[in-house]
Figure 1 (tube, helix red, strand yellow):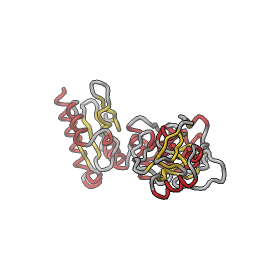
Figure 2 (cartoon, helix red, strand yellow):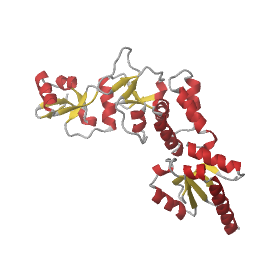
Figure 3 (cartoon, one colour):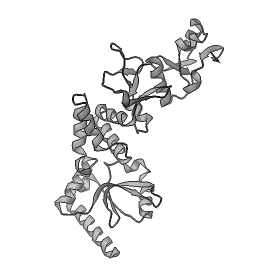
Figure 4 (cartoon, rainbow, N blue to C red):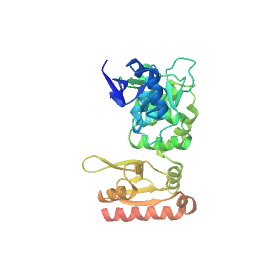
Length: 304
């Protein structure tokens, strides 16, 4: 077997992949027990996760964490938040990495958390370095088990980027009716009913409906001339290119660019942008309705 060395201590050739290895692998490559012990005691090798190590000073990446889980529990499949992060979810790395398809009796081990959760053979992939659930399954699992506010923000992101639809959540309830976390999935479905992706958006929708203001679409994707999405508008009157943004609650379009740059792109594309806050909806509903109605009348008059 070809070998790498670190200060003369053999490392397995697999370390060439993403920079992680186990002490057992290093000893199998020719290192002695005393050598591996010296490297860990001195801090030359540091633990990544589970039984996986890397050289000190190495920046730990998501692929390294995934590979470390595979090296520790070869039959395991990483699921939940770290799997979602692997597919681009804007989440902080979890303190514990969820691993499914483990043998019974496993206990948490250095940042790895075994999960006894149903996982079909068609719901995960193995690329030779790590095993991870597919994107849809990764996001839905995270929505089910994450703290609710984090789950709600992730749902907004997933809806805005076309990663999930409501049918993906419904399918979870149908295919796994008794799974832990289904209650939170149902709550997310209720809150996103009618196209609202946050409580403030829901209140804004209800305000417009009560006052008979129609012709709008919730969470409309706005594209530029090349077909690229430049924003996801909270409430859009497409016929007059009026965008209403519910500031302070909605975060989905902000993930595409910062507010100012994003607003400039909308304006450059010919859109008028109004911003309202949850406090406006709560404390000044008449002002909001008047502002929206007046702006629509002006824009329709201009375009007539």
